Image (cartoon, rainbow, N blue to C red; front, top):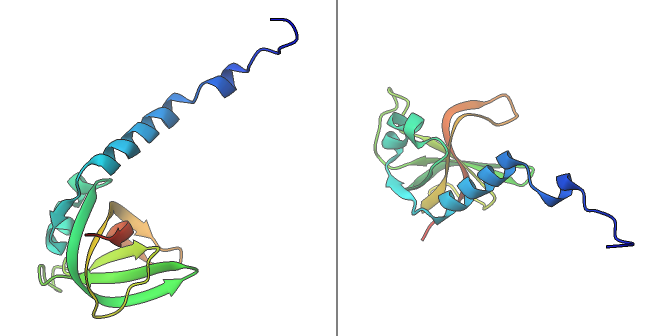
Length: 130
């Protein structure tokens, strides 16, 4: 057609990795969250990496930095000696110490806070679950 410039192939098609990433995100969002205990998230963390899980417990510590809320969730499973009784959760929603809550988020490994702290496993993008 005269007067119409051809569209760029690059603009017309998304990169394959972007398409796959979007499809995986949509699939994960559609999957129901696995209900887990804190100790089980630790013991099965390799298998759970990238999966959405739901964990219920009590917030034992809470802090906020630059609009990001960090909390420590305990549910009575695990032991302090085994270091599997306290799950770090990262949320856009504020958390309160002694708050009993069910949180749903994505399991991430070796999460760095950017403040010199690194956790072996954490629940990222956590939201209050129904």
